[in-house]
Length: 434
Image 1 (spheres, rainbow, N blue to C red):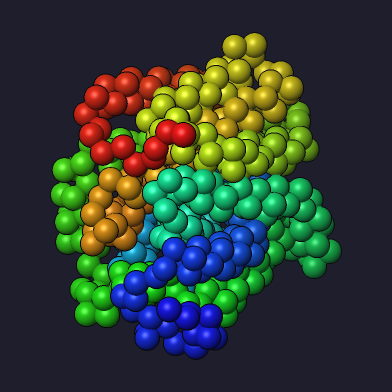
Image 2: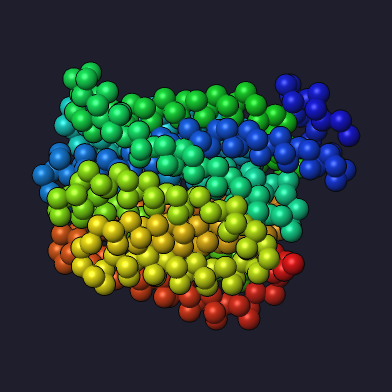
């Protein structure tokens, strides 16, 4: 089958075509290249606002208690969009879903910037919620990398996309001071600039997807259905959960994604205010930058490690590293160096838990239910991390940052125990040693 000529046109003629191994590999390489180009600006947009979202919320509320609402709204927006986005992809393919999600997110960034500048906290929350739709698209990009991958290379393919996000994820916080200066130069609040740049970055990613993600991987595989039901989140989520509940591997995959994401978000969200309390606000952007290096920088090695030892062992190791990260930020009180170390390990533990969980979920459900199960998995993960982000401000304000970190440590320990018990029940191993 020759697909290269369809790259600039409609992909409908490719629906359900059986690919030869060489053709499948070539299409996978093309898809991966497009994902890499688009993921960089999208990750820069998200990570650039991470370092300021809590500070902007705190400045409007003059309190840390509700300062986590911004991160919670962002994550809740991602959760709310997960299932509808999966429905769009099921009907029309990956390209319109990813491009549309980033375009909507760009609008949300503009609305959040407007709300922040006007000091209308309610408008800021609405904009941040809509901005979260782009995060749903960015998260589902890792599934696109797995669409055409062979079972032996699935974790490696997911890890390669997570890794390329390192560039954007590190650039985002590092250019935040420049973006803040630009906003100030324009007469805006110092925290508004990063949101304006985030909107521009998201538009760049949307254009890349729309123009170059051709042929569409799902269309080529025949996994789209133009007559599938339109987005009905409750019904589709229930159906997906029934499929997931029937697979111990899929259940463990979701649990790993949920705990890794929630523990990471809770601690990361309150790190900038915690450092500000100790007079090191200027260091928080660099701590976040090192944190995202831990999240993304080693992901190619993480993917290869998962392919070699299996997803379950990788989840267990990820839980240990996640706990080490939270412990290191607590055991010696406030030491700036330990914040760098702790947040790096927090990111690395997240990487193992997220990539291994994604691989396990993707490989443990039938092909006919895969897109819907992926959407339900991201819905669960994002909803739980939204609760974690929202509650993090209350916990820090009431009992301190150290208790928040201790809760994250306990969650990591729970994941370790769950993975240990689940190991004997997972009969379908999605990654093969060797």
